[in-house]
Image (cartoon, rainbow, N blue to C red; front, top):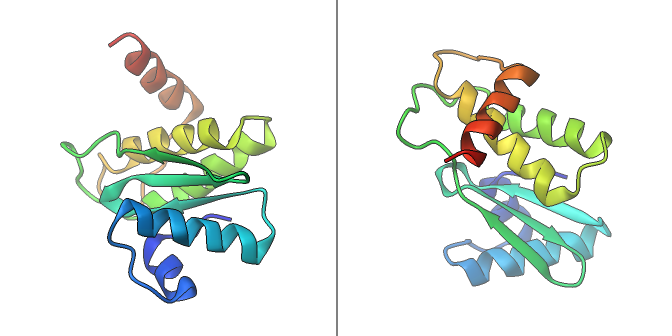
Length: 129
């Protein structure tokens, strides 16, 4: 499950303005859906992964400086996150990979795509920094 922040706020019935609000919203999503984990995308605020046992991981946006067009960024996160989960990645690592993929597509105009090679190259660049 990968709701965005506005959809999350609608569902939980309160505004998410603080980290505590976000944690409370994530907990409600987990409880109500009986999901093992939930990823909430927060636009320029990054994303948050919620897992059972109150495990919460906030992931920052990896690319704020070179954003040209956010069209399709959320879809990219969802697709790559789901693919990474299907390949066996843990939820937090799957979210990070999805975030990296989105950081690539927002550098292009229009509804852009990325490739596995571009994602791998970006990961290598991050590791070598």
